[in-house]
Image (cartoon, rainbow, N blue to C red):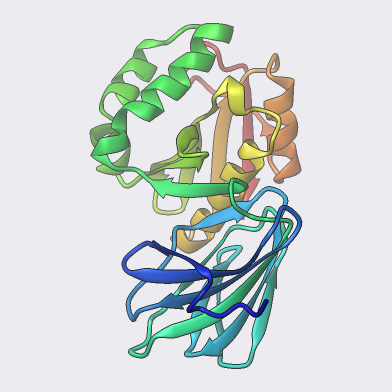
Length: 259
């Protein structure tokens, strides 16, 4: 049977965006979508699915791995698994495109969500979970986690979350020391979501953010007993440097990355 947008399963998302399932299976998904002017999706990646976007009409603005790329009518772009991306329509006319996902991308999505007062409690809950498991919540933790907006954002820092299956499962922060010098801190992934790559996704977004902010030096404090975390930091180019007195009793290693 032929499938058209008249007989296909239809759903809406975002701000009045339309989507029609042209093919829906566990191994392959083909969707036609329409995005009105000024709409955009949430920055995200897929853990397993690769995707191809083919533009039918209009011009799509893609943010892929922190870089902007325009894709015009009759052009396509491939997004591999675990690559952070989003599509936006920054132009007056509607944007129409076909998206092909292999395997099915639904339920396979990790979103990057900016801090909001509605999500304020998550940074505290996520960090206290691992602190209470391995160490203790210190006075400086209590101050920052109880007032993240005042202690981090209002001082020039950034807080963001990872959302998976509609649950906030991870967080990380950039704490401003100076215009070109930031601390990576308050990073946590809830135990139930560990082992699927959330930490890597948080680090990928961190690297994109520091590039946009013009950061030259990124520092972090950790503990040598947290081997998986240290391996993650080394993977992203952090190296051990001399330790100086700091705000964390648990910290016995300082790592730094020059950008």
